[in-house]
Length: 112
Length: 115
Image 1: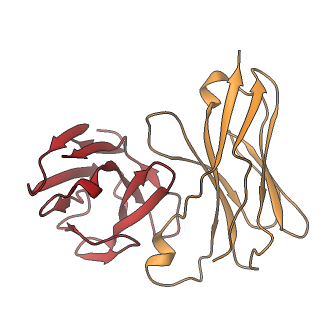
Image 2 (image 1 turned 90 degrees about the vertical axis):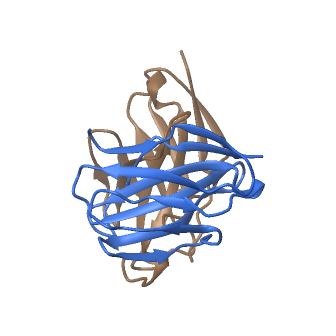
């Protein structure tokens, strides 16, 4: 593994189902982030974690939860998916909160 | 938060220099100017950042106006791989809370490179 990996690459999900998007980094970065990207709206921060064991809410946290049990992994969970959560989701990490962010390849999620 | 304004799109011929402008007339004294780019179907990628002085790295150069109300990202020799959306982002390290973590992406400039 080099950098950040995300899984799955894409997913079609029925509304109401639970879904976890996975994110793993091997750079030993302290901070990790989840963004969503929608057409015409740019990237918006969902949740972040500045170190293992801590998380915080970003601009659009409703309907999503995260955990940071260790340095490398930062899963994003949709407890009960809704169509408005159809988006491309990007995970990112950085050495510290103000350092450059490295992004994963993204997960394209469609909720029907 | 201070905002940035960029042209929606620009075109460049391959192997020619490209100057991508960004206006940030309400920039604060502690805002850093960051540039990221996003290639098609990929996540954003850090390009360069600076505060007051011009900056160079292997990817690009950043020219910052003396009054800091504008800046220009310079790609010295555009290649087809440089076709992407380029985002100019202001970040203030003094900001606390979620705002200090978030990169605020606008709509950016879509750069097309003509072979």
